[in-house]
Image (cartoon, rainbow, N blue to C red):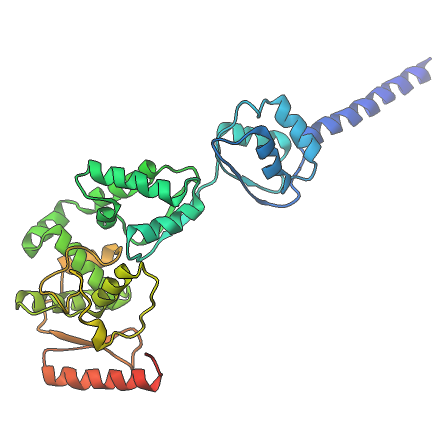
Amino acid sequence: MKKTVLIIILLIFVVGGFFGLRFYNKYFGNNIEKEGYVLIPHEANFKQILDSAAKYVDNKESFESVAKEKELDKYFKAGRYHFQKGMGNSNLVNMIKAGNQTENSFRIGDFGDIYQMVGKVTKKTELDSLQFIKDLNAIATEKGYNNAEDLKKYFFIDTYNFFWTVTPKEFFKKFDDQYNTFWNSERKAEEQQSGLTRDQIYALASIVYKESGGKKDEMRTIAGLYLNRYRKGMKLQSDPTVIYAINKQTNFKESIKRVLYKHLTTPSPYNTYANPGIPPGPICIVDKNSVDAVLNAEKNDYIFMCADPARFGYHKFTASAEQHAINAKAYQDWLNSKNIK
């Protein structure tokens, strides 16, 4: 009798253990075959969710079963979800239902215009570029601007994190807040002392950024040089403005490695060889250092600069037209030696 009871108890433990293990594996055991990101649009249906998850889960049937039990077909949130090793079906389903998506990183570079930036950014968002631009245009109109291109000064070069489902309004708010934080009372005082409008500051900052190649150690010197030219009534004669003028006309499809004399007459309000004064707006998205360089420009007497072939990415500065001619010839000879046209 005792032996029979022991056998029954043992069987109960075995059967219970068997079903307990099945239960654990179904809901909590690792069901990830390979790691990856699952994108679930707002308009997704249950089949689309299952198809997207199928690339990463090991046991597709158990995932579908748990998803149905937890009514994922009725309750889910759009997003970009990280399916990681060790995650079970219950974790995966709960993550999607709660909307615990993973942010994506966006690099905002020195884009020539907002449309270039949006084209890159929307590759990592749910919305397409046309809708993104349409919504940014609406934001620009609300702020009293003509279109999204006038929002260029709100953006700074850096790496940012956003969700795949970010809306244009949410996207811009991050930069609007950053812009307002950046322009604190100290910088506003420097702005007043500069005698420049904010648009002029950004336009000069974009020239400084392009001329310096983003190298902080030359920015204040370059800013001082261009302010000298501007205050003397001289044309700024900045090559990057010519390149920008041509790029605007060709929708940024032409690559210009060397500015030639034929380029200097390109008709554009941004061409500082053809027009006096500061361009009407920035020729690229800038970083904070270039804006600060304009606000705190180096006090020097330089009015000429030329790329230094002996120090790639850096320049020779001078106040002498004669010395500049020597520097320019050395640089032209170097370009010719490298067959750069």
